[in-house]
Every structure is written in C-alpha cells, then in structure tokens.
Image 1 (cartoon, helix red, strand yellow):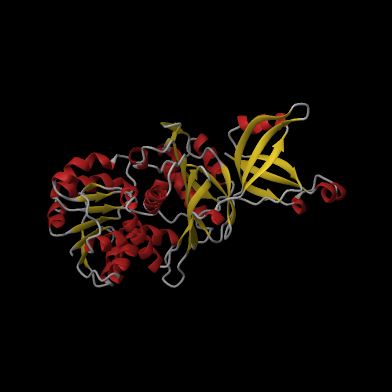
Image 2 (tube, rainbow, N blue to C red; image 1 turned 180 degrees about the horizontal axis):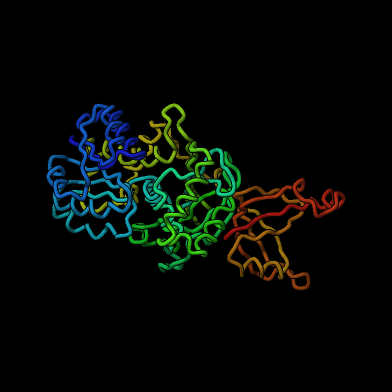
Length: 451
C-alpha cells in the first residue's frame, strides 16, 4: 500500500514511526520544513518539499492509495475535498471549522472513505462514544472529559503546549456547542467549571470547549452531549481574564502568544494525557478512562502518541480489510461496530495504551442517600456550579452518587430528591474553621457536588 503522509511535525513523525513499526515501507512525506524532512529521511522515507496548496499536490495524490493528513487545522479543509476529488481515501487528524459530513455524497460517488477528526479528541474519544452506544442502552447523557497537562507544572499557567498554540487559543475563544434537552445550544468556552478527580493525578478542573463536532449530528438519540477540557485548577480563570481583556483577539495575538509561550516553557514538556467518557444510564454512570504519560524511552509526548497512533492504527486496519464502508465515517460510527472497536482498542493496547472500562456493577459508583433541609435543597437544585455541603459521619469518596432527599423538620420527607456526583471530599484534617471537639463529635466533611 502506498501511503502519502502530509506533515512530519511532532504528530506526523509519530505517525510515520508507527506506520514503519506496522511494516508499511512505501511511504511518501510532504512537508515544507527542512528539519522535518531530514528527520523523516532518517527513517528511509521518500520526502518531497512542497506546499500542499501547490497545484502539483493533485498529481502526488494520484500516486498513492491512502492519504494521512497531519497538517495544522487551517489546512484541513483544503486537503479533504481535494482528496475526494482525486478519489483517494483520507484519514485526517486536524480539527476544521467546516463540517466534513458535507463530503459524504461525493466520497460515496468515488467509492472512498473520509475519516475526519482521527486523533485523540476528537478521535479516540469518538470511537469510545460509539463503542459505548453499542454496549449500553437508555443512555441519558454522554460527557467527554479530556486534556493534556504537564507532569511538572509551573504556576501560574501550569501548562505547556504540545500542539498548535493558535488552535489552543481558538479552542478557548470560539462558542461551544453542546446538546441539552435534545436541542443543540451554545455556551461560552471556559465556562461550566467543575472539579474532577483522577487517582494518578489528583484534583483537576474541567470546563466547556467545542469538541463534539460530528457527534452532534451522528449521535441522534441521546438527550444530552457535552465535552469538557481538563486542566490544573485555576487555568480557565486565567484565560477567561485574557479573553475579557481582548488579548486573545487577532490584533493582539502575536504579542500574547509570545508571552504565553515564554510561560508555557517553564512547565515540563513531559506530559500526561487523560480521557474520561461518561455514559449516564438508569443504574448509574458507566465510563471509559485512559491515562497515558510521556514516553521517556522514545522522547515522545503522551499527546503526540495518542494523536499519532490513531491514524496509523486505522491505516493498518484498512490494509487488513477491516474498514469496509465508504463515505464520511467518523470514528463514532466505526466504533458502534463492536468487532471494529475491540480490534482498535487491542491495537492501542499493543502500543502501550490501556483503556479501562467501568461497566460491571462492582465498578459503578455507589449510590448513597442523605436527607437535607429545604433551604439547602433549594440552593443545590437551583444552581449551575459545583456546590459544597457539610455532612456528618459519612463515608464518601469522589465518584459516588449522592441521592439528596428534601426533609422538612415539621412535615418529614417532601417527596423531592436530586442526584449529584461527588467530585471531591475535604477530610476533617483539612478543615480549620471548627474546633477539634466539634470535629471529633460530629466528623464533618465538606463535599463538592456537581450536576
């Protein structure tokens, strides 16, 4: 199979290395950066120095059986339509503002496939959504939580970028599309902040970013869909202030990026990538979870591996005849084929990335009931953000589902109840505003709750 790889930067080179490991030996790399081409040549790869906007690219397309596009997002929708015109199947990792689904009819006419958003998120996240849809029924809500953070953060940003800085700023500024009550609506990026807990990392924050993309059209029967980005706590507020000061707008972008990159470099490039896909069903919250760390042996970031492994695995599965559909086929569609999803996850596991499934009853969060006074019940029901409540002599841990029943001292239970997920618990040793006697007597804890 003749593969054309567009772009050999950080993600592109990881794709190239992985393809070579899979035994692909007829690969051509197109890039304009001499350093990228030299590195690719070191793997015995044919290299062409060419801008993909050059008219000659069409002839190069025709000489190959599969195109993998790993160029920055701004090139994505110049490449996909051109590949379809030339009748060459394409796997694309770039986020594009344009909707790739509009290429469906033409791709089918040419008898080829287009797999858009084939990276980490969107990408692996979409495949897990599709796989979950094939496993579980009566799903009320799906929430994707994903992000990459440095292993050694440096305040105040506690972040080091491992991908396009322009794309990061775009993610923090463009409106976020989510699905709520069966309707697609928009919320502000960096809003909806919640506290998340990961065993290997500790407490993080999650906030809305626009990443659902094709899921808003392909997942039709789920009332609620949302995606949130994971960062160290405090990150969203810093960028919200920068946005309100108009420092993330084009007129100031150059200077802002210079300052940001100077700060980013203070955090380690060694990173950790996290993904949690939650499915809210009748009996609780089922989920997939992935945690992957920097590869010190190969000196590759976790984000570049998760992004680069995906298209390489898809190319391998195509060579083996496991991609049989034509048209635009996002990974959530491919993932609904259980055999395909299991095969993809097995390939990912062979590369050292394990996806945990929490689907058995013993894996599900505990459901714990607690009565609560009307004034506190109203506060929790009416609010939008994470709340803190004090509970006495209670064994709670992050991930538990707390069923709060309204209880009136005069009337007893009112019949109203609400379910919340415990996002964090501050143990009594962390509290300093009660006396030791009170803590010893009542055992109070502060519990963070989220919708």
